[in-house]
Image (cartoon, rainbow, N blue to C red; front, side, top):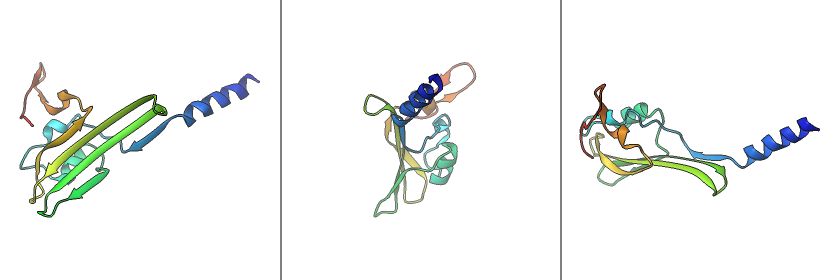
Amino acid sequence: MYRVLSVLSVAAALAACSTAGRNFDTSSLYLVTPGQTTLQQASALMHADPVDVYRQSDGSVIARWAYKSTLATDAVYFNRELWLSFGPDGRYERVVNAINIPRMNQYGYDGDHAAPVRSF
């Protein structure tokens, strides 16, 4: 009886969990350099392809990385998004939007303290 209740409890807990998007790693975000980094390089640094790529008429691109996980539907959730702009030449320009992205990941680390590499 205890085993059946345990299995049912685990099944119920897992049924309440969900994820959307692709999990991505922003710990190397500070390496994304304006005028140099391409979309492919940014994707490699974040270990994930963007979930959306919006191509503009001038040849520029806005890429969106997004990940949402929910423990109990609409009760406990975690949401992260990062929108990066790439120019017509395919090189990174700027952060368009960042939701729940740690500021530490947007700066370099020199071993003793965080040091600003560049501003967004």
